[in-house]
Image (cartoon, rainbow, N blue to C red; front, side):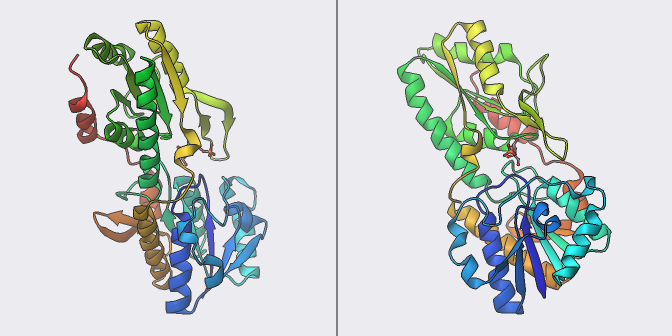
Length: 344
Ligand code: F6P
């Protein structure tokens, strides 16, 4: 078969590991040919692609980002977009598409498969919140980087007797904040699933100062809601899927904490730092397992389906189910956070 591959939406470590495994198994086992569309769905619309052979993917599983580059292009919003994709695929004799992406990218895959274009998905998001899958590649790497950053911030917060608020990615779900916060022993962990109670946050920090620990660490997900303010928007930009750019809750929270507690408070936004760089060994393995399953899905003609991790198994579900909602933290995870908090 001649198969098109693309990566859409925000990047994450492990994308190249998926590409590597798809191409390797596709060529070695099935005798496939591969076309890598550049810049996500934009590359399909622009007929912009590179050939992907064994040489092109050699060693890429250890590289961060995506060798195919990415964009947030909503084909559904472009008049005649679906037909244009169909035309480009036909012109390049593409038999099937494998789209690596989050819910936005996969909503396009779904629209295309509903239109009769053969395609399957591989779930991708640093936020780890795709419905129906227990873990997405890149998350493990992001948590390690964020944890190391909080560990480093701890020593300088301690030296200077400061509170430091550390902002991490997590638009709708606080998986990174949860894991990095717990792993690093932060005093306060805030996730978008729960509205922030600023008085409680201050009480937790005051507990430290009253008990001889003259510093505090707060980990907050970018998508958290501040009382009376809601989410904190970055540059006010909105992408083609209607998502506003989020950034700055750490800074706002630091101001509020300093105002209420009078403790010197600083903020650090880890932002894209946690999304960049080399994938962990776990993410390289997970990405390759997703890739191996995706190429099998193509040869089994599982159109409109997406690979998922269930427990320790890779299987697949419909893209429709995967994009229906986000997988968010629930009471079990809130309990971990509260059980580790000071009792105030
Ligand atoms: O893909 C999810 C995500 O990493 C969010 O956590 C974040 O809000 C967003 O992407 C950032 O996207 P961009 O790189 O386009 O600013």
